[in-house]
Length: 594
Image (tube, rainbow, N blue to C red; front, side, top):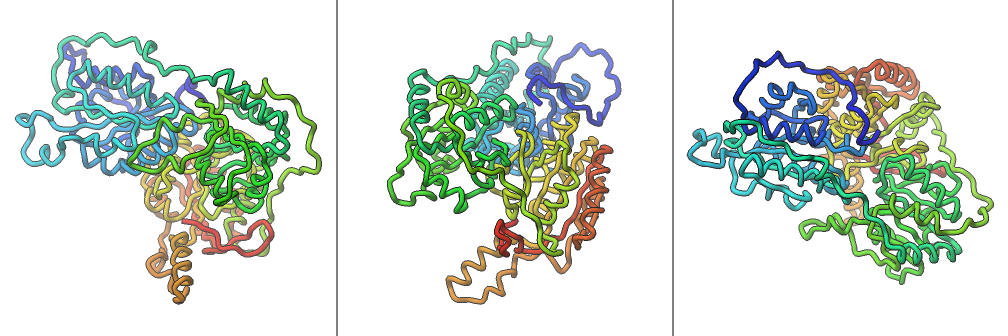
């Protein structure tokens, strides 16, 4: 999907007809501007601070273009918009109530910031005029600088003081959010301004004249310098990081790798960027370089980084404190989003050639500028490991899911930390959508719903493979999927623990010569076990499980896939063995999963 695709068909809460009205309110004009910006949906949790805007969306616009999507928590509202952008490349909006709703939403906004995804967050305050406030509630829900709550992890925020200023704020916010590096923006609408009569509807600006600029192109000199390095390289390496979901960009990256006969590494934190079963794909995607990937990088004499997340940290994994022997070509605009408040920009990266543009702008130019190299010999496409025995592990879950979806178009929105990048191949830019950006927990359900919304009419089976902790913190997002009839398959790799933190406690215990047997205390989610399938049914979804044996797995997944193909949201609780999986060599390995 792309920004020109029509919005998918979902359940519609239709309002009754509204009589013809002569009066126009401030929020009517604001709603009309949102429509002009072609924002398809507004995910929201209701609040009195924006009751005027809420009324205008329903009764002035007819709850269409944008359509409201009710959520049960503000964090889910923003996570849905984040997931929608990841799958479609298109911005949608979220609306959060006053300071309290914005505080609920902050983690999801931070995720979108770190993931460089466009989300328009609309909020409200006040009335700002203290004389117009209701006793008590309007006072505790009004703050002097509400945007300060999110200013350090949004691209821009504003509190307009008039309808004309609100038009400008929305136009500017849309342009900024959709200009690379993309990111969330926040507009705070005064309650009194929303509810003020404004006379006739003001003229709407020509939105097309405020569109984001076209992607920046690298200079001819930097393209020539990078092409010369790559043409002369003996062992070039491509690090395929933050790239878009376009098939054209995907095909160009494959063509460039094949022309250079460059090895390629990808990152499980980011969306699919290169076919993982291509012979040039050097190692399974991972959050950190495994020995195989580090060895490939160490052998490289030129490294082309296509907006790789934490390039400096990756180079440090390879060379440590030694000088970096490879020449580095950096392709990224990410430095435009750096802040002093957080360190999500990672360590400072050395570069011998710096192309301040998006990868999609640079790759075709490099492809045209480098010569065809002789094909490397002895390379083989990577296989997928087979599970051993009857242990119900994440690998067993992956193996069964792969078997049942062979030949089908599947989008995996998320995998748990215990997932090995070798467990499934990605062959299309929509096969995998990466993680949440901020490294927190609880975003998986909402982002899965947003991605499924964007892909509803694509024919793809949208699937989230989540940990139990992530699921439990965001499970009410599934109500939104059920209500709006958004098909989504959720496989919960449930080890009944915050197991990643068990491993941390184990490391501390070993370092202090204390019993590792105590690592589970304060981590295990058991006694009583939580019935995730029942919780899913409570949201109006189909719930299956708990699945506790390998023998039960295939029938359960077969049923679940059929239900989702029929338009349902289905959650399958799969009780995987805590802390045990099988790595590529078949040796037991405690893998992180939270």
